[in-house]
Image (cartoon, rainbow over all chains, first blue to last red; front, side, top):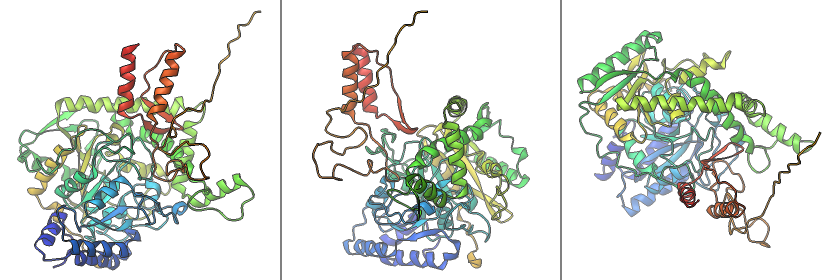
Length: 485
Length: 100
């Protein structure tokens, strides 16, 4: 029986009833990765180690953990000891970390097997995976179309059924938007829920790791393992981590879902809008009530984000100077020349653009006008959410204004066009709130995502609402036709 | 015209902590080269600094000794390296305000 398109829960059963061994499972997963090489989901494979670990699991026969023997893929910005970690950038194309990120370590300690590192937008800056030094990732649903970004390789690997789940990171929508475009489920947890130790930083106050999987249930399984305080990340939350599977099956009678007044959905593609109306009806049938809420400052989210995120990026990326690690330019005159040439050669256009914007926004004389002002607006946006959650349990929006688009069709002339991709997702990063994207049908044979935003630390509620939706529909079971690859 | 002279002093003082301000690497004097260094000090991709609690104790003690007013500090920005001071330090600061 093929393991392609199987969920973690399915694979667990197969492993437990011995219809497959961990070695066979990993071998098949690795073969699928090779078979669909053209998708370009992976930057680096971890074949030798994966096979060894699977063999060891078969010998030990200890399968106490849900994740034992399960193949996973990690976004290539999580440091992995001894395994190349590039951030899909030339500047780190030769970087082999001496340590492993906490989130990945927790997953691996639970027995899961990292089969490879997935392609992404360079340093997670992008919404289409087109800024990667290692080339575009194809959307498994349609060749030549973007998988979304920045966790595009992770989303495509899961959507193509190579692995049941993968890790991603979300700074402005980088888990949810690719999950939506690839027809899978992606969760961005509350800021601080998962440790950022070992996760190469883009914008530290917005970055959050999370799972991409075929089902909400699988997201809960991964979140259970990834969450928790880490002494190495002082921003990781000290709060109690519940068992996210415990209440996932609760009926959602009386769940109050808010619709954001300021998002005028009639501006959207009529079919995307129709999908949204349909899912709203589905939720009403399941017992949810809809209430219109106003978040007056939410329209400022995109400009606020594009002031804060590049500022933090310019600071975080200053360490890449060609001196201690990564790409170093040859034949340089002096130290300053070494910095300039290494960085000029090592970074791609979008990364350079954001470093320039950020450096400008933080420079003396402009700091108050841009960075500080943006932080103040950010607080107003957070207050809007706090107010909204006085009267609702969750908020519902489309994940993305449209479906996946063709390579090169957006943002090549005007980068702002691509920045608007994140219209619905960015505000939850600014407010630090958890949000999930679930597939809810297709428009022109491409998947569409539905987003639910939850209150602080209420991933349990989101997973519950998403799981009940998936129990009563089959959108998440739809599979792409991979005949072109 | 008479001017009032106001002189501000910025002093850099090495604290007698066992470990560094942002990492747990030793500050011991006389060790072999490249031994009192860890991932954080190297500034490797993905690392995050953790503030040394003892350094805060000393700063607070100094502040109290010279009769300075202590202010509530929630965020520490070192070149916008967003570092939330650990909950324990905040608790400690709160405790000290109560004493003042």
